[in-house]
Length: 423
Image (cartoon, rainbow, N blue to C red; front, side, top):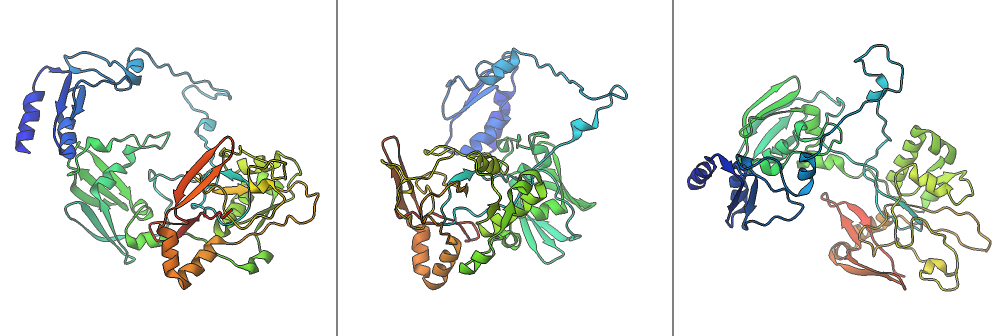
């Protein structure tokens, strides 16, 4: 490192800084060296390659601005901000309260995916979290003690739980690393080395304060934030899926929601979604008998995802079916579209008319079935969780294929998805 450090100093000690290159098999070292080079364009294991999307330009006396990419457009344009007040103004320079208000639909823990059932309208997962703001105060748990090792900050909490926080993870999740409006990360983790570490750690006002060894930077983390996003075993087990499996007794207690309440009342929507998340199946009563009603209801939760069948489709018998759902034959229990890269999450089935006998819907809790298999036939369960199977749909227009195991597990070895379609 002394040689590379000396090289970086000597090559950067010039009034010019157009371009530089580093050739090495050690990419970590290459990024550390490049980070210290005072050159506007740098290559690793190549030289003078300038694709159109890559800004090109120099530091210091090697020119102003950049060629190529969005940086070139930004250099030759100016930004003008215009604020238009649409309400009454009591005094100049005083912002109206309305511009500070935000609205947010209720969010839920991640829902169970793909129970075995028949339904045909789907939405994307609406939940999204990022560790950028303190959680509401939940308890008065304190830090008993903490200590540092080579790469990790260890904390012992007063409730007996222990947690470790890697230095790179902490630096990457400093609140300053996120855009204040979009809440998306704008910090480049490659701008610090993998050797970054605290030079000082202190505790005050239920916050942990860290001074970092690089960038003259300081970070603060509230106790609640540290506990909310702790990823050690003592905390990970508290975040297990809060789901309940069921058998045939569930038929008398399937959760229900009223369509009008769901569409107009956020509290009613949240309550219905919590039930759906917990059990994987819920009904909506008093739906309008229109083709648009199911789309409007689904979009109350989130946006819809298009498949090869479209955003929505009618399930009815047709002369030349490309799917067994379009025949008069009974469908066996299944999950839909396991042949897709991202199978459906939530799906919605709205029965408008039934002009024939039969046509009952059958629902089975796939998670309950898998729990029984895991308890009684563990070898079969492991086979289904690890063996890739081919899933395919094909007609005159599409040929969609995917290889997947029947069972998907999360990092806690919990069942999170089942893909089963035998027809």
